[in-house]
Length: 192
Image (tube, rainbow, N blue to C red):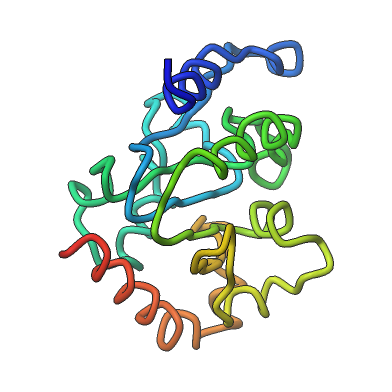
């Protein structure tokens, strides 16, 4: 079995956090080993947990609008490899979902970063950005400046969740100025 096939099998069969959940864990990831883009977010939503398809929710719809791509292009495994800091839905708290379980990132995301070979990284939301770039980095600085991850170009996006409208309202230049640059780069890589 190749390292990639072993990784997929290990993620899919993982139940390490089952004791922390009141439901059956369902690790979520999607894509091929050599995608155009590796997209890393914080954790699946409840709807994604139920469907088994990353970003099959309102956040995904918003993200596809930001990218300016069709759903069919978004779910082509050679276009996007989608993963997250926590591979399973972490459950609810009073203001949205709980934080992802970092043990998952240490166990799987670090392996994914070594095995998956994208041309570009897109990091979505503060949890993923802090895990990958450190807590001392300002999210605004990460979002508005190009980054490098594993010696490749990386962009950081705010989370597209409807709960994040305040940040977007306070930073209108993101959608007007920054996102078109990122969308153009994605279009170049996936030829759409």
